Length: 562
Image 1 (tube, rainbow, N blue to C red):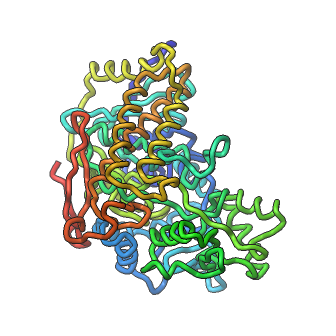
Image 2: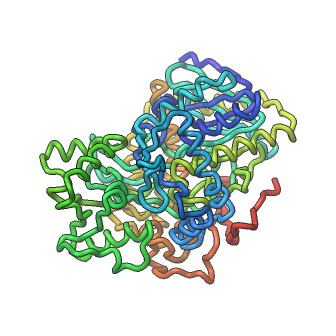
Image 3: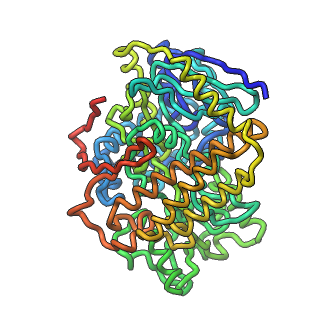
């Protein structure tokens, strides 16, 4: 295969053209004349978590609430292990970025008095089916922004502990890219597909989180030696059974409570209401024989049912189609609920890069925003916008303080050879799908997946550690017949690197702080004395070093010393 090498130069490279990436690019264009390249694995018009749209903005400071009360909510939901400085800096920007999106064209529902229609204490309703195309159109109108669609980024260019660009390849053309940049912003998605999903075979990609978010940004940082945080705080979504559609639309939008198979409300029997507890209580009810569990919708007004039909068409049309196909909507029968497989996603939990308040990672020149930025859970869409803005302004400031560095040509050749080996490997016994399925089976059974009731212990995690290492070694011998298969190889390798780090984090936190998210059978109770702190890690010389860091409060503003 004739594989062409291309070298591009820009001021700021943004990896990932999703929620945070687009907003970061717009912020740079509005505040400078710097040249920006967005490298997007899919097509920016319908990529990332917003691809299918959303029907609400789940992070907004409504009347009567404050940034401080939002911080209180996030802190309580995560049992205190959050970066308060990061969450607070996001909360102060939530309403500002919302107004900008409305100016771009996002339709936000309003009442008769012109106020945004609230959905709960922190949410507002939108007509958001076209939220991603609106972002993409705004980006494409900026002359200083270049978008590279269908380009898979695979590794950072690192020299002297400084990120000065990244490597990637085109999915449609035989092109290997070296993109040199004065600063880099990682805005990729989290990691789906690590664990065996609810639905097998043809329907295996019917999952809560985007199946195309494979943890690439995490893996690139891990391999480069960036410090990562809270990877053990997995996210498990409580969803409508089979369609995996969101339940919050029904629970918050229609006020439906969770009931078991006997018709009993059960969530309050399991302690303080929180995101992990809603999942944990449902799992326990099923395990103890009181399932299946439902959202109690039977008997709801027909008008509410029609509103739910429209709401799900904005983001999860399979749920509306299921109701219509069956001829029995939520007013006729309750909606059965179930848990998904675990995901690693910093927009809902605190997993990701260890960053300072500028969203700088521990590698100079590299910033993180959105799902890959750790420490600040419950950021959702608007929180990712806010972090994109912060990272963009910080990257601009970095450019003013640092001179550009040229990439060593020998380093480019070395990376190019690493990529082309997959095109030249002899045919092997294992296919890409074999590695992926084996990985998901290992993580499901030994690292707390659905079949294990989300429970982990030392013995099982030790097996998972060894099996993932074997699979990662075997993945080096995979063969790609075209660029699409080359992308799939890198996706499974990235997932395996994320699995390695997740397992070490699960082993390191010897307590149970977040039920289901991190349910440790060896240590079933919370231990504030020893573990009211962050579990961080750094990958060096093929070994993962665990680092424990103290909690950062709102007014402390942790900063790196790169």
